[in-house]
Image 1 (tube, rainbow, N blue to C red):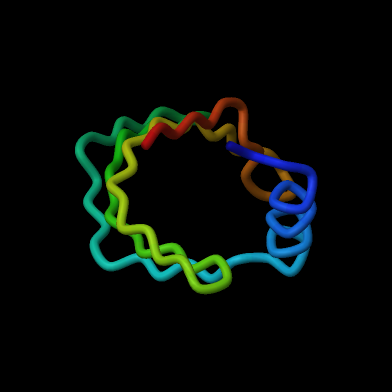
Image 2: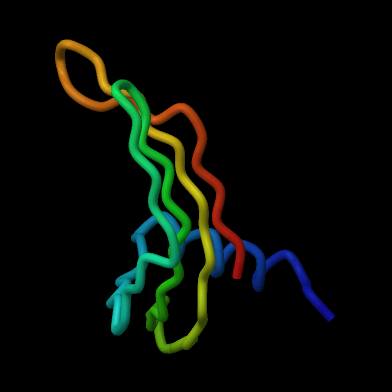
Length: 80
């Protein structure tokens, strides 16, 4: 059961941030045009928050648009 103190402690830990280490990264597909690049990818990560460590696998897809000043993220989604 979650109580107020537990929620408060978790909130304080998250405000302090967490450490993330990416242990593997793989591009599954990539397509380029004159103004856009799309990519699908997956990575494995180790997340540390306080005294808790979580190992997870993440998949994602991103669409980037080339502009005169660099790249703009049009779409980015990731799921664990």
